[in-house]
Image 1: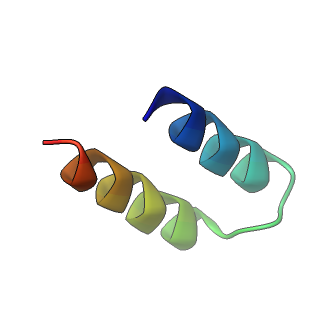
Image 2: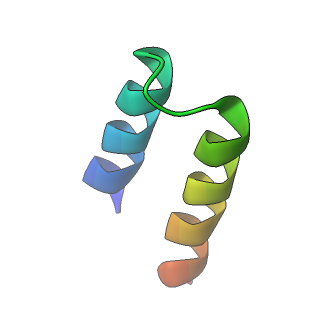
Image 3: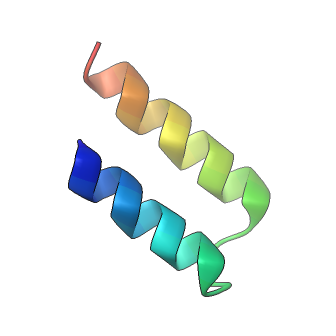
Amino acid sequence: MGQELIDVKKAFDEGVITEREYERAKKDILKKYK
Protein backbone atom coordinates (compact mmCIF):
# COMPACT_ATOMS: atom_id res chain seq x y z
CA MET A 1 0.00 0.00 0.00
CA GLY A 2 2.71 2.48 0.93
CA GLN A 3 4.51 2.22 -2.38
CA GLU A 4 1.27 2.60 -4.33
CA LEU A 5 0.47 5.80 -2.43
CA ILE A 6 3.99 7.11 -3.04
CA ASP A 7 3.72 6.35 -6.77
CA VAL A 8 0.35 8.11 -7.03
CA LYS A 9 1.63 11.14 -5.09
CA LYS A 10 4.71 11.30 -7.31
CA ALA A 11 2.56 11.23 -10.45
CA PHE A 12 0.43 14.04 -9.01
CA ASP A 13 3.49 16.10 -8.01
CA GLU A 14 4.93 15.70 -11.51
CA GLY A 15 1.66 16.81 -13.11
CA VAL A 16 0.94 13.43 -14.68
CA ILE A 17 -2.47 13.21 -13.00
CA THR A 18 -4.89 15.88 -11.79
CA GLU A 19 -5.76 16.51 -8.16
CA ARG A 20 -9.14 14.85 -8.71
CA GLU A 21 -7.46 11.74 -10.16
CA TYR A 22 -4.99 11.74 -7.26
CA GLU A 23 -7.77 11.88 -4.65
CA ARG A 24 -9.72 9.12 -6.40
CA ALA A 25 -6.66 6.87 -6.71
CA LYS A 26 -5.74 7.47 -3.07
CA LYS A 27 -9.29 6.59 -1.97
CA ASP A 28 -9.26 3.41 -4.11
CA ILE A 29 -5.91 2.30 -2.69
CA LEU A 30 -7.00 2.90 0.90
CA LYS A 31 -10.32 1.09 0.29
CA LYS A 32 -8.46 -1.90 -1.16
CA TYR A 33 -6.49 -2.38 2.07
CA LYS A 34 -9.31 -2.01 4.61
